[in-house]
Length: 469
Ligand code: TXE
Image (cartoon, rainbow, N blue to C red; front, side, top):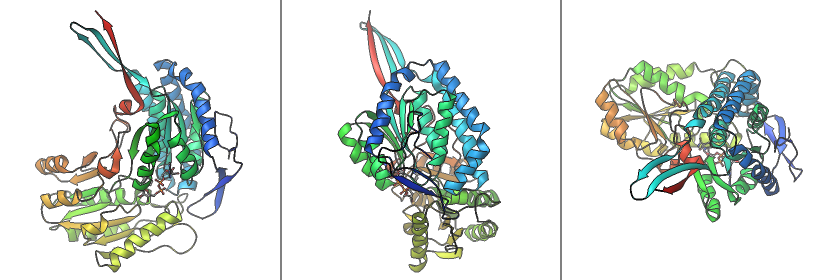
């Protein structure tokens, strides 16, 4: 596999490569160029020559190209989903949903090109005020490994719809699907140089994207620690940043909730993608009056989950890489050893090849024991006595990405929605993120928004023109 740059598919200037592993088997499935600062500079040069041309394409033609990209992705959905499962680990069914979701993202951005507009007013004594939204020029997109296709779509779709050129740095552990998606966008008509992918490590290629002075905006999705490093490295060039740094979502089950629906929702959303989603239901807060029944029903559902290679008929695949599995295992071991929670099910690595970890259920968990997110298949259940206490626990982490409240009582729902500090609150749902919903967080979850209409503010800048009367 070669780096995709300006449509030419050339190798890294460094000549060195990185292996890509199958997380279910531990075997190398491919290699990608280990891109360096020279490769990023070459991608930026290609973007510089293409950006004015792309910005000058009419909204209708940009729309047509993005719709065509969606169609090509749909045509190739099975092959793309197999590739995604093979490099990322998720079950094929989830991979296919992600690929179809990515197609829809480009269709959504196709529908939004005509909405990228500013503001106008008559200012008596002064004249006609026009505020137009201008593309930023070249945008950087740093993509993680957990949902690589759809997060690529959010960033590249928004940047292109707004008339920018893009330089994408995919994750080193899941770059292959992004590379193929970029080829399909070019086949759909995105001109050469308007979309570039530089593979490589975060420390080298990612850092070069962030430091490059000609890249005027970086959208980054990843960890808090790397988000801080990105923010420091970006400071000298004064570029805009959009940071999505994960979450520690509370999933609150009130006493009057439909318990079966809440159990099904918690199990689905906690173990989806092996628990590796920024807005997974990471802390399950259950009213003390129904917590025993909840835990019994959750255990029965979790016992039935089939774990294995995502290309087989399974409910859950492996973690994406060995480091993630080690981090999850040590978080669970610590909770059990320090008696901050009781192990009800799972709690162990699976022997043999692959990064498998059993779906795990912990009850009676102390809120402080899970103030950091556990990015894997672990469901900690925390009992609470009152709604006020539940909201206090929900807000007791530095994150603020998502949360949900499960109740039939509208007052309970509205109180929780109003008082929980997070970018999104769901009622009787969790992890539903169609592109119409602006997505992003507060606190350590970062700032800025992807999708919705809010993307326009991230990927363009206003220019005011006053026409004197
Ligand atoms: O993240 P990193 P990692 C969280 C989750 C996970 C933890 C570590 O808790 O356990 O982060 O995962 C690129 N300059 N999330 O180590 O390092 C890197 O190459 C520029 C939450 O994978 O943040 C990759 O493309 N870029 C999350 C991307 O940043 C750099 C999704 C993410 O890597 C860089 C993933 C640098 N100095 C992990 N260093 C979410 N928000 O959904 C690395 N990168």
